[in-house]
Image 1: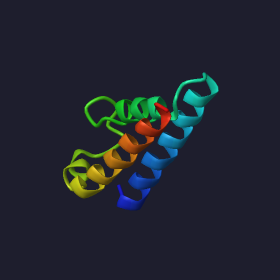
Image 2: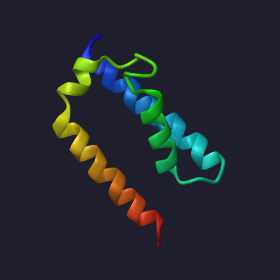
Image 3: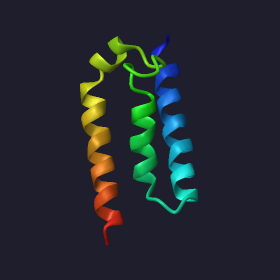
Amino acid sequence: MQSILVVGIIIFTGFIFGQIANFFKLPRVTGYILAGVVLNPGITHLIPQNFINHTDLVTNIALSIITFSIGGSLV
């Protein structure tokens, strides 16, 4: 699977799950976490394991953004 397609699937799924969480009056971060669980290569095999192994920098940046978003929703 091409890397750009995998990134698109991840972003789209995160967006959809964030909107669903927002619809149920939950923070969008909850939807992002659920999307991560659903896209886990050990559960659904939608995202190849070798893609996960090569995205350490992107993972750290994404976690930083999510942590910032969680901190903003606590106020």
